[in-house]
Length: 315
Image 1 (cartoon, rainbow, N blue to C red):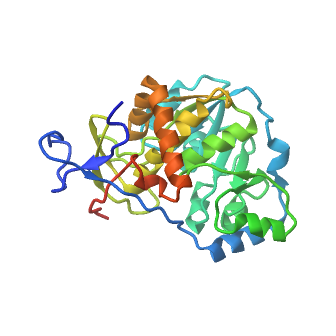
Image 2 (cartoon, rainbow, N blue to C red):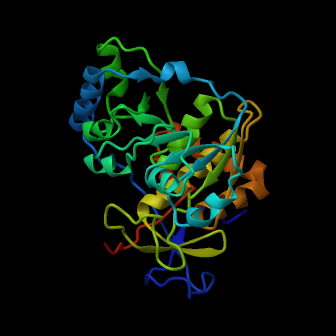
Image 3 (cartoon, one colour):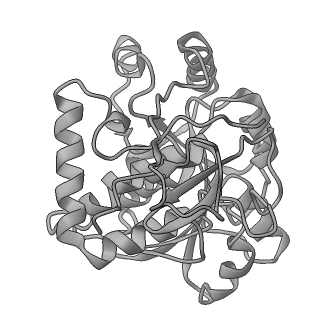
């Protein structure tokens, strides 16, 4: 567990064949910024409000105490979806939505929340699916889902979202969480009431064959080698941020006051780090508290002892 906080890479950029003990690793420092501007997000939210929508309020704790399979689109999901028992609830994210529908297993819930227009490609309509769509999503996402069961929620932390909603007299909950689909949907699932969450397809790394997602990536991916918890992974800066986030989220969900249980399936950097934390939950909680305290003191979450590192990424 001692090496859990460090995501590292060799100064010369060498990867998995390198001995991490023979030379020091470079610490990875992540500086996260939003992909959409305040103006773009406000325009999308305004369009959502003007269109009219079903509020998320009425879905709070609607599934209280139930189990759900939270499905991301990492390459391991190509196999692990087969392990989901018939009849179990599924909350699918982004391209996992279309993948499951194509394979005859439409999810109970589907989540899309990125503000980019390109995310309309994730919006695969199906009459049996309830779509949990972020108010910040582009109007084309809603156009694709016209006639479907769509519920709208607001993402906490978005630029001026709290002030914006107050100005418009909207009293609805904000769903917090991480910056990635999986790390945000953990909180979304919890808000719906799920307390046993089985996470699939949250690899945060390339597969052995070089795949990034079950249906490919919509954008060019960066490429870097990371050493964490005794193993090397081929990954991207964005996926490293997802792993940094789960190092905070997993211990919090494990606290008695939360009453939640999180399990992971498949192989990837994300699952590897969660399993390390699971083996020493007291230490994982200690790391999370330390990191949060740094954030309270004005130090970036990704700049604390829980580090990552500056690598040259190939696009």
